[in-house]
Image 1 (tube, rainbow, N blue to C red):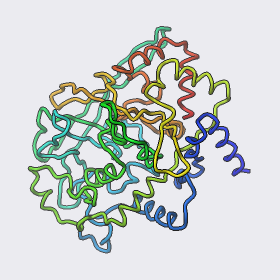
Image 2 (cartoon, rainbow, N blue to C red; image 1 turned 90 degrees about the horizontal axis):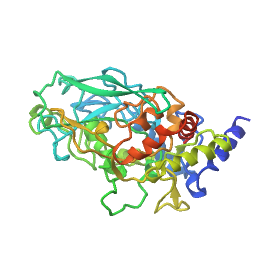
Image 3 (cartoon, rainbow, N blue to C red; image 1 turned 45 degrees about the vertical axis):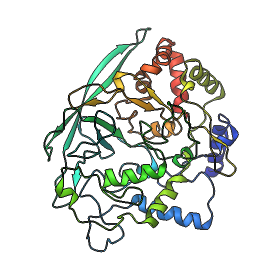
Image 4 (cartoon, rainbow, N blue to C red; image 1 turned 120 degrees about the horizontal axis):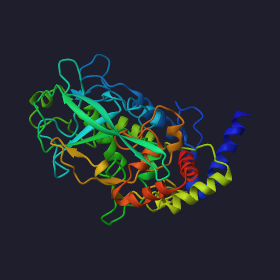
Length: 411
């Protein structure tokens, strides 16, 4: 009966998206064992299971006893395993409250040109270290509430985050260093996004990263190993040691590369085949009303319900609700430098598929830095190119706003 109920829910949920795109949605009956979006051969299943093991493995420092295949962690890092940030493939499951930032959040660093890393600290400010080394910093988060009201008088409040950097081991950050807090996104459907053909126009983004600055799943995986865990791989053969950090650069290696090609291929295979969670269906009138508002407000112009994919047999399109393009969403969401200067920031349209799965499993936080405590707050933060869509949402009746939020919660 339980199996029949799950299948029925899936069939109803699939009715809301194009047939070919719906193939990748699956019920997540056991969140600890996320399904693949298609059946696997025996060989694929074996590789997938090895990838899951690697994903859940806590890596050890170089030279650790009986850890020859899983050593090389650090010397500075943020998390010791992939699962620590992307629990069971999901987005960071944290409320992002004041205090030390959670392990599932990293603070990336760049120069004012958006490319050069901080000369002392590299691309990521690492908050943990192996024995014999010190973390690069401790990062504390606080919020200021920004209240407002809808035209009908109903109040709302948004959180404006601020960050404090303590115990900076190599001295203060340069004043022009750009601070980029980033919460771990979900990995569901990442192999399918990787299969969307690249566009050539200026608005096109890479497939991955909150700002679409990573071109492929392989590059994203290599970057995460190197910058967040201090592990080299065939995709990125250097740890994220700043040019001025001689101790980090001289640390013992766990091998060249530290993540072997076999283990890297396995964790890539695991990610490529992760399905997208299917949400329980809305009643048909609510589904129609929510979709109509989504389109009428202009949300669908960026959160597109259909994208083509190539190179996957039997699948021609997916429904991620993104255009995979970069958009300026206004100064409120923009990154800032250490001196407080606003940087013009363009954000890849965040896919909405799997959103309902996140909100059904609290705690959760939304947007690139977890400032939004709800879908409603995430919508209200939209500005810049999305300002007109947000204003239409604000001017809607309370019933219409709730209908749209309910519809988004079912993606």
